[in-house]
Image (cartoon, rainbow, N blue to C red):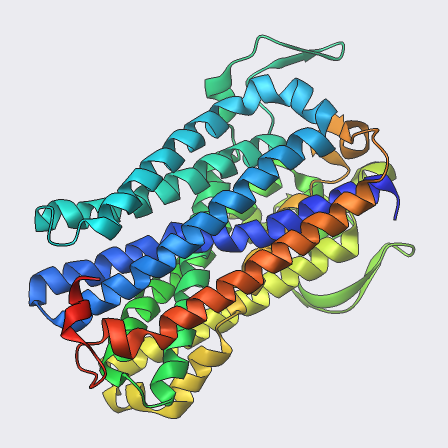
Length: 447
């Protein structure tokens, strides 16, 4: 493995892990706050136990996200020094603001965890809600920095110099809103399905059924919001990409020829040598409509761009197809669940419906990882789109492959630790969190 490939692989691996930790950290506090609100409204002790159980999970994932995020910050400077040398002064503001959001989140989660029966009940609830708001703000601010790499703004690039820097304009670049919106919706969808799937499995085991049923309903509700919102936010993101990065759109669709009334491609195998896609299902004129609200709009093909600026077509196309496939599957599951909720309530207790959510547990995160692959790989060969190539930003330091192996071991270890801790939390539900269980010890209610 050469150093350039090792550096890219290390960033891909680190981001791949961190995006899961951060998305759970963005969404789980809202599930926790909703369960807490239900407790305050109904006085049902099961909701209180659920809130406490989820809050411990939030704390575990907050700590893990902090560790992985710190590692990523160091990696940016160590692996891509030329990038940080020029880009740091321009897009540093969202990173500094993200640090502020992180500190607010840390304070709020401390108040929430140790504030039971000590604070006013609604102030205590607000602390939990604030954990979600600050976590969401952190995610959006980091995405703003990434969006700047896709749509650089806030400076003038003259003779290799970065002049007239405007950090506000850089932060609110043309890509930040579409990316932040789609990322936020995807995070709710992925986390909602993952949590619903876990509780669906526990319901099928016939233990603490009331507890896990309430948890499942809350998580499934958030999952549906994300699933139904994803096509809308995806449409906004796709139109933005078509305007700013037409070569990325062409790679997503493996669209080689510029044409009016372009077809939307489903499936297929791209052949870069012959500049064509094989075995694809093409839906006439739909791509033109999706990017311009006009069935006859012109969509640029890859052949309109220099060959050395093409991203890896197959990787981008397959990742895009994976994202769409799992997104559609989750929408279909959401529609079935919604139908059951209003018209076939007896379905809600059927094992086939619970098994459907169980199998869908990883679907949101598969789609999320695929979406980020489209975003990052589709920008190549640029680290700053149209300004700096990725190969020009990498560190000259040798031996990066050993750093890649080391960081991979750390992230795998972190993941195993998380699985162990969350599994232990689930096992403690009968004794610590579910007041309807015979094993529940009233002395633990304030724990």
